[in-house]
Length: 170
Image 1 (cartoon, rainbow, N blue to C red):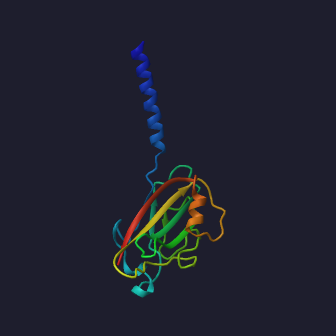
Image 2 (image 1 turned 90 degrees about the horizontal axis):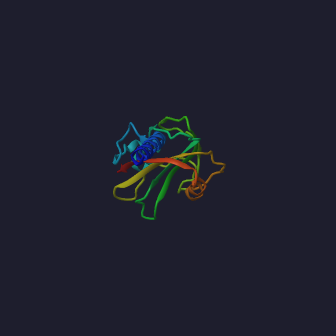
Image 3 (image 1 turned 180 degrees about the horizontal axis):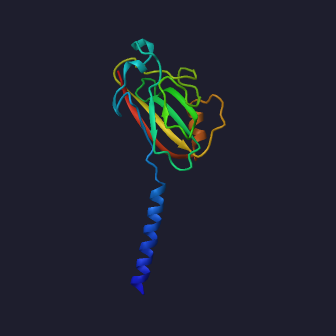
């Protein structure tokens, strides 16, 4: 009797684990322009670096079940004045699997320059990390021109997946 009960419990646990494993997402963000933790092409930098100040192409895979929208934040944690926000895009449609070069896939928020657009890498000195953070949300956000702090506060409790891609510059 004890062996049968033990086997039933094991089978139930196995079924639950298997079911929850099916719900696990492999959300990923890549770029055809650069590898994770490698040099970003100068084309995507600011004009001070002879760049075009345009966003790189990005590829999204492994969308979690229940995703209603995506949020993309690009920032520089190595900036001398603290993390510098280069780009905020929210309410990106959940059906998005790629973001084209020099495009706006959703609604833009305010970056650290006080603008609502992409601002390319523009480090004052040395090499910096540019972190593209992608979040899958279970909702769309009702916001108007948020900065990173407001956006992150509104995202709380709605993040069902996240990933990141880091580019280095210069």
